[in-house]
Amino acid sequence: MVHTIAQWIMLLTALLIVGSLLFRIIVPRVLSIQGHADLGHMLVEWEAIRWDEMERLLAVVLPASTIVATIATIASAGSSWVSAFSPSFIWDFIASTPAGIATLVKIIISLIIAGVLFLHRARNVTLGVGLFFLVLVAFTGHARAVDQPLFIPIVLDWIHLVAASV
Image (cartoon, rainbow, N blue to C red; front, side):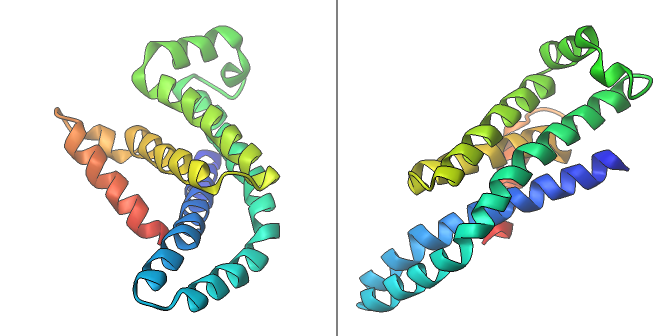
């Protein structure tokens, strides 16, 4: 139960971050191409004012929910919650499976996203890192359950996640 709730919070937070950044980066460009640059800048400024405080909240929620979901996954892979805090069991889980390595990278990426969002820097970089985070979500999610080749289901799941973020 904890795992499912934490996974949903992590997923929704990542989608909000990526969707907000896509809006801020793409909409002004599309409107300027169509000759409505002033409208594009006005929309982005209005959206930025609304999202400044929300981004700080999301910057805390994303890594926290990613870590809680990872601990819950480790607990369900072991026999109890006690095993989730055993250093040897955690190392075995993370180092022995591709999903474990992807989960570790997901935690690191969520911390990078949080830092950049909290400092309000480099939105293009944050978008790129956020899109990569969604690749890791796809890689560790239900698309992984499909037999070889993994590439197609992971790409389709990633496209689905990016579309859902918008």
